[in-house]
Amino acid sequence: MTNNTQPPHDVVISKEETLFKGFFSAVRYHLKHTLFQGGWSKPLAREVFIRTPAAGVLLYDPARDEVILVEQFRVGAFAAGEPAWMLEVVAGILDAGETPEAVARREAIEEAGSDISTLLPITDYFSTPGACSERIWLYCGLTDSSNAGGIHGLDTEGEDIRVHVLPATGAFAKMARGETNNAATLIALQWLQLNRQSIREQYA
Image 1 (cartoon, rainbow, N blue to C red):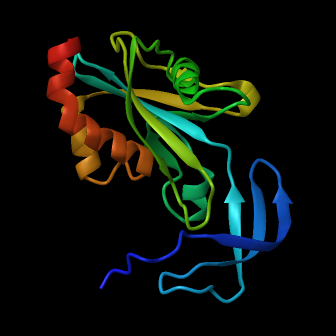
Image 2 (image 1 turned 90 degrees about the horizontal axis):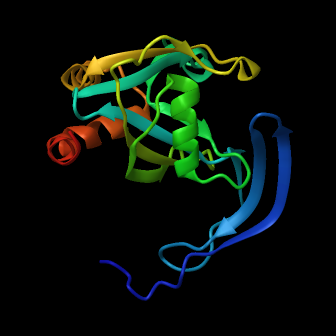
């Protein structure tokens, strides 16, 4: 039976340790938190990666019914023993004072050479809330795919990014075969599957 008289959730931190500080930071919290049945948990130690918020954008041309995805090396996949070059939506982290919408537009140009005419919000979510603070804002960016392609990215950031232009149905087929096995791309493509017809009716 649900306990509807439970007090609000709360967390008490007794100590915070910085374990590492680089491109990411790692922090260990010594804490306790309220329990569903009332009272407090025993003292816990929990490590978390601190990651700057990010924004991702699925580039879509409603007139040509084409999707633009990017391919690049991903060290996390490499460390997991999986193929290290992944097919993804365009994405990047927020600079200080930058909005997620601005990041989506900036990264579309830097990673894919594409200007976004209309930015449609999809959702925002925590990528791995059990271990990482990263929050991602996800969009669909309407664009002209007729001249898309080539190699892009910033040399200063060590980026080597290849652009792929696919029929929307081809992108959905790749998703069904497990060839787009990262969260942002899966969420965005599934959203496009649900909303593709109405987008084409309004913007094509």
